Image (cartoon, rainbow, N blue to C red; front, side):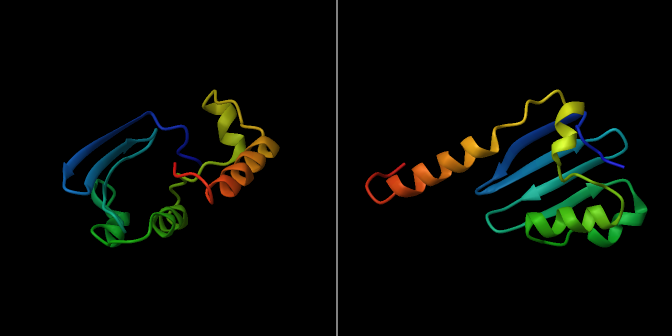
Amino acid sequence: MTDLPFDSWYLRCTGQDVALLTIQTKRIKVNFEIGPLFIKIVEMDQPELKHLLGKEMHAGILLFELQKCGINMIPEDADAERGKIHLKDKGAEERAILDIAQTLKVFAF
């Protein structure tokens, strides 16, 4: 089961280089603390996920750990339709990335 699209999300700064992200899905509400090199769950109501509470991880690792527990917050192309989002053209995206990579030698963005 997917938890996408989110019902709501709220991002706010809580300190120097630290933010709090609250995500409400159809099933759960999770509060993440985001730092420069980590993300961690700081609050959630599901007792079966308490083993993840307070552990600093890389964002991708945390999302995969949540996915192992049945909470899917990693979007796939099929999720775009449910969220009424138009998918970007992959070819155009690749060309833009290459263009930016080539100009980095000359300009600062």
